[in-house]
Amino acid sequence: MAAAAPGALGALRAGRVRLVAACCARLGPVAWAGDPAPRRGYSSEVKTEDELRVRHLEEENRGADLKERAKMHSSEVGPFVSKIRAVINDIANLPVPTIAAIDGLALGGGLELALACDIRVAASSAKMGLVETKLAIIPGGGGTQRLPRAIGMSLAKELIFSARVLDGQEAKAVGLISHVLEQNQEGDAAYRKALDLAREFLPQGPVAMRVAKLAINQGMEVDLVTGLAIEEACYAQTISTKDRLEGLLAFKEKRPPRYKGE
Image 1 (cartoon, helix red, strand yellow):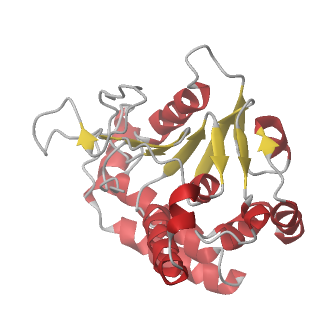
Image 2 (cartoon, helix red, strand yellow):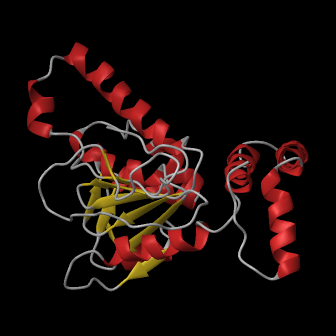
């Protein structure tokens, strides 16, 4: 699985889960083909790295192939799952906001990928769940850790123990996703909502967005006093940036800021 580069807007399709990774730069053209064929890598309509503000990353990845898994020797399963976990961790550690758009199935690894994102949106007809206990295994891509952090320990245990599958409305009710949409004829309602959210994020200062994500992620793992110290350290990283001065000047002149990520 390829990873979106910092300073890019990309889309990763995992089955019917798409990941939008947004940087804080102006929104340029998004070249999503939407075809069902597996696709890998980046594409963009811009020509030079300096111009590059929006990248598109798409990969067909419907999660673990159970037929393939059945053929594996027991000694192969652990390293295989470790690689999956590492890829999902890479997504979680991207230094840009990430949005998972769930327009269809997100079961097992598909939901674990979505849980690694900062924000999740889904169509009402989408189906999602950590169903591994039905196969006499447990979630191995971070699901046992990220689901309780997203919806609370008790409810996460209930969903994992039961291998229950939720639709979009149910997922919204338990706080698993932030937005639920009625599916459209194109089958990409959640993806379109994710792009709308990304457009809201893009005009903001790139350095500020990066350290805001860092402060939130690290602060949630510690006590409040330590979290406030983390916030202070992250805030300090923005003080000397050219972007901060540009933001103040743009506010004074009542114009959109022109951030460069400096």
